[in-house]
Length: 406
Ligand SMILES: Cc1cc2nc3c(=O)[nH]c(=O)nc-3n(C[C@H](O)[C@H](O)[C@H](O)COP(=O)(O)OP(=O)(O)OC[C@H]3O[C@@H](n4cnc5c(N)ncnc54)[C@H](O)[C@@H]3O)c2cc1C
Image 1: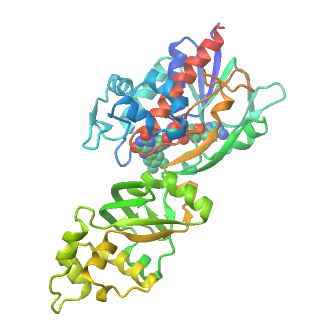
Image 2: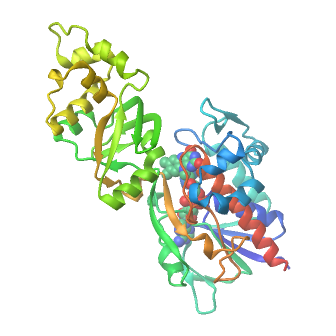
Image 3: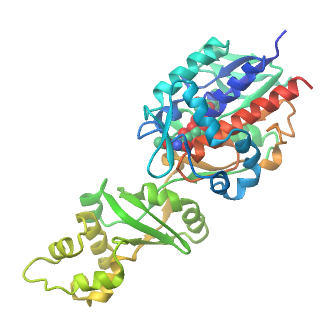
């Protein structure tokens, strides 16, 4: 008789676990609290599904920072190229965008997810939706809340792939933390990653510029610097450039209550060139018009400059050109908090790697495996989040197969 394995969580990690297990001959049931699979995966595909990245593997692995050594074996076993082949085999060939990021040609997640679910279904994987896992009973069976009341399931092995705690309405809400902590599993606190920050904007600034993007800027904090863009939100600032710095900014905000972010509004122009342009006669035009024409600042960039000048008591219009030029390329923005985890792209923290063996099995709970974003790693956007979720899912699936055949 086939081994019965329960996979809990139908995100990219859990579905990859199910694929590997079913290929290896196990009878798999995937449980999920939501009414359908892969809700966050579908959301990830909304602005273009960035599956992985095309950079060389050593650079790729460095993006995982402190978790690099722990993730390297699984990602080396299921590399970005393997993920691209896998996508192509599901009828979704990929392409490399100008930034080196990899996307399916359809750009969205839905055709890929549909084809994947169909293949899993054909291979005999069972799905049980609206099944919220809430822990174990006294005989170590899995407890679920379902629309038909509580249910208890026994299995030869189980794999948890419950995700982090961002965007809880898509299913992953981090409620598993208390269940595993009660089993004395060490979990690094879940924190927002690739997240925005709060800024005490003036009412005038947020009313006027909420939702507007600062494009072509450079952002720096300490020794860290990135090119990108950022968007003004009602309560602060978010967007690609901010996310790229978010892990160092978050740690600074947690430690000091604030962080001073520097925004270069025209990083492509050196201070000398800016100074020359700003030294031109202003004539009768307003100061804002002058900035717009002389150095091509957008309305929101001018707004930010004015916002910061007012807060710092600087008379912008009377600044000498070289001081104004220097300010334009180093606008100090004080971040005074991290935006809530519910709005973050991903989650830092999670199950400590010291709690699992090389097969992704919990050392304290033989037969229970874990995968995906619920482990203690973080990475920037760029395809690194999905790649690690898929790769750890494949590794946990292989690990469970080895354990079942021991
Ligand atoms: C807006 C947005 C855009 C993104 N874009 C990208 C991108 O382009 N590229 C990239 O690499 N990454 C992206 N990500 C991140 C990526 O989607 C996640 O890293 C990835 O989905 C994590 O996979 P996972 O399987 O570990 O967890 P999840 O996808 O979160 O899946 C976990 C599953 O577990 C279920 N679950 C949770 N708790 C329970 C429970 N108690 N009982 C039963 N089921 C439960 C949930 O319902 C969910 O289906 C994006 C994220 C967001 C929010």
